[in-house]
Amino acid sequence: MTANGPQTVTTSESDGATSDDAMTDDAPLGSPRVDDAVIESRDLDVYYGDDQALHGINMDIPERKVTALIGPSGCGKSTFLRSINRMNDLIDIARVEGDLYFHGKNVYDEDVDPVALRRKIGMVFQKPNPFPKSIFDNVAYGLRVQGKDDGDVEEKVRTALERAALLDEVEDQLDSSGLDLSGGQQQRLCIARAIAPDPEVILMDEPASALDPVATSKIEDLVEELAEEYTVVIVTHNMQQAARISDKTAVFLTGGHLVEFDDTNKIFENPESDRVEDYITGKFG
Amino acid sequence: MSTPTETDAFEVDDSSIERMRFYGRLFLGACIVATLVGIVALIALVFDVVVEAWGWLTWEFLTHPPSYLAEHYDPSNYGDLPTGPGGIYPAIVGSIYLIAMTAVFTLVLGVGAAIYLEEYARDTKLTSFIEANIANLAGVPSIVYGLLGLALFVRAMGAGSSLLAGALTLTLLILPIVIVQTQEALRAVPDSMRQASYGTGATKWQTIRNVVLPEAIPGIMTGIILSLSRAIGETAPIIMVGAATSMFAPPNLTDPTGSFAAMPMQIFEWAKAPEDDFQHIAAAGIIVLLTVLLLMNAVAIYIRNKYDR
Ligand SMILES: Nc1ncnc2c1ncn2[C@@H]1O[C@H](COP(=O)(O)OP(=O)(O)O)[C@@H](O)[C@H]1O
Ligand SMILES: [Mg+2]
Image 1 (tube, each protein chain N blue to C red):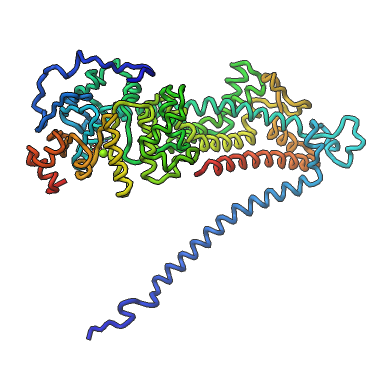
Image 2 (image 1 turned 90 degrees about the horizontal axis):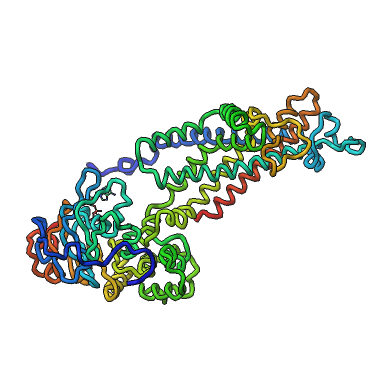
């Protein structure tokens, strides 16, 4: 773990959910507990005003693996993703109940600074959203705001672009605007921006849904590679994509319930829930 | 026999379409006339002023203090005037200083208030009440601001009839518009930009400083400059505050509590004078004021185009 910046997110395993508090009735089918969990969601409810968008979500997210969240649209996948790095704090009417542990520390504890949390848990959004700045400044943005720009920024920017499989394409136009890139390149730029400050976890909300098939397959390859160094949580409504790139799959169904969570193979070959089977075989959703 | 003839399937000359086209042309004509009325009135006005001022607007007029005697402004007399020609110089400098100070105050107060309302304040009944009233304040007549400035800055604050009191009064006058326009500029920054910034671990202030403000600045600047160009021509408030009529030296920026002259006030003074020649002098003053105003608008347009992607 890097030593830069304020760290209110501790890594103590003492409190938190790894102890044997049994899962409640809301536990999904499958095997929602994993051994090397970095993120543990326990009875997590999320409300928008009076509407409940998530009902008692219980699941573990394993380290350095790709965890896919799938389900029909409106079932709360993005909401769950945003509750991991507290991006829901930015929505006035959103309210979270229950616990979400990151390295055993509840991120909703009073002493957790959401900004510090987001420095550990980076995010890539559905629609590519580069800043109207140069490619270089886009990637350097996280380094600068996190005060990690003391060393060799240039080197860090190039490494991030390299890892995001974009360096070859933009090597000699680092000073031109990030907005001049194609959609697929913009999304890889956003991935480079997210990984440049070296977070531990990367959250991706349908990162390829706005892209053409070629760009999509580049992003998919990239996601698999990223999992060698980062924990990746990716929302997708494309089941083939989830099957191809993920190790674990969580199936959310309408109403904001997590119905089943298991190894991706198990979910796609032999799910326990009939509704999940129907959804996967395309009978609804 | 139901074979449709050509006109059954597709009426070649449908008179209702023709009628609609006629109404369309009529409406277009009305729109063109409406546009022309505005343009013609403006051109006539400017033309009239230019004709009035012809021969009176000289370099000496721009660079000398005013005089009580109309002859002093007449270029044919310049040669034999012991006190030098009459002009508008102190009022030009006064107006520029006045606007410069107003610009600083508005930038700080207006942009600060808009950032607070748009980025920090939660959407409560109180904030929407405040926002609605700021919009209402934009419609209050300028003489009311003049009275307020007189009571508040000139008397209560003890600033006297000074540059400072004038600038603060003009600030109050344009503040509501600047706040509303700045809020609009901030609102136009897409939320996805803010999220991108927060998502990379930026604080609120870092997000506002590095992402929101750079995006919004062209809009904010145009709003401020256009408001200032309104303020520079305002006469009522500075009459109330008590701008001096005939200052023979320009005001001093190091002494913001000193008295000052300003162009609208000076023009008003000349226009009131009984001698006919003063009408020419006033027209010359108006041209100077209009030129400054147009220059400011040009800068605003330039900024907007430069940053428009
Ligand atoms: N900002 C928001 N304000 C109010 N309701 C929201 C907001 N975001 C999402 N919701 C609601 O929460 C539910 C789940 O939405 P979301 O998490 O976006 O689903 P998904 O990503 O699976 O399509 C939906 O019913 C949606 O209308
Ligand atoms: Mg979504």
